[in-house]
Amino acid sequence: MSKFLTNDELQGVISDLKETYRVMSPMYERMGGRFAHTDNLIYDEIESFSDIVWKEKSHFSPKEVVFPITETLFWLDGNELRESKVDPRPVVLFLRACDINALKSLDHMFLKNGGNEDFYYKRLREKLKLVLIECESSFENCFCVSMNANTTTNFAASIRFSSGGGADVVTQDEAFAKYLAEVGIESNHKTGFVQENHVKVRTPDQICGDPIKVREILTGNPVWNEYDSRCIGCGRCTTSCPTCSCYSVFDVVYNQEAKVGERRRQHASCMTGNFTDMAGGHQFRQKTGERLRYRALHKVNDFKARQGEHHMCVGCGRCDDRCPHYISFSNIINKMSDQIELTLKNEAENVPV
Ligand code: SF4
Ligand code: SF4
Image 1 (cartoon, rainbow, N blue to C red):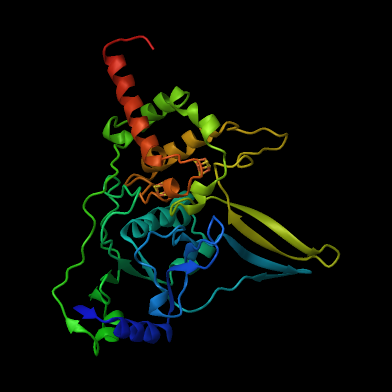
Image 2 (image 1 turned 45 degrees about the vertical axis):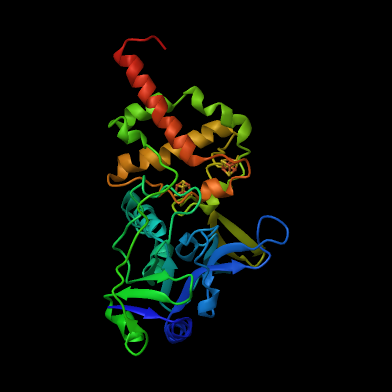
């Protein structure tokens, strides 16, 4: 089914959906931006159709719907342990193709990695019904096409907003189709995807098929040295990344005598200083260039080498958008590939390094 709906009709559909679902999409957090008097663009539950922000790329990703920044796992009260609760309603989630592909990596990390399923992720993930927001064109810093993350079939419906108002909605999903039965006019619209980005990358596996060799070449490579001073280890890049899945677990004690408190988990970042802290004060990666190397190799080499199907990075470009020191991850990927190419060429020609 493909239909064109006016803004008023879309508002009616959203209202009807909200009787059953939590409807979540990119929306403004007013005055929550990183500079004074600017808005933040986050994922949250919307009240009306007009809350959906589709003309801009969101600053934060939809991963927070299934992996909140801070999450209570359970409560402790004396000798009693109570599991935390989540909103029981299913969720309709509006998101873009790259972010749908990012969910594949989160699913792997939380549901398959190590052979264990993460209970807390699973209970939120199972609630999702995905609505693809079609991208009118590529945003600044996007390189989803190079990462094969610009297309997807994993959605219950797609929506293409029109700058003149209204939107084309396409669905084969029975649960959604009933919301469209009485509204809109039939259209010939087919779900479309961005086919080209201004930014393009070559991933290391396009140069060398051996991920161990890639790691050997890039570990200790001088290409990372400039980031020891440029990168300040703030972790903004990982917070906004739709595929970063690391977290820390800690206990909050309300009353030590009565043993009352809660256990929480909270996003952690491999770019910040304490990520690899060990007993005795040892840190594995003290320099920020080393942390960047670790993160970059994980995103475009190591994850795929273990998981076998796709890279962790989907090319959303949010890390580039957010970095306060204008460090570009797409540039880093291309530099990595250039270094591998150069090393392999030198090895073939027996040039001493
Ligand atoms: S590494 Fe950067 S470009 Fe890649 S998915 Fe994460 S935020 Fe997006
Ligand atoms: S790359 Fe940029 S955003 Fe990431 S930790 Fe370094 S300075 Fe912060």
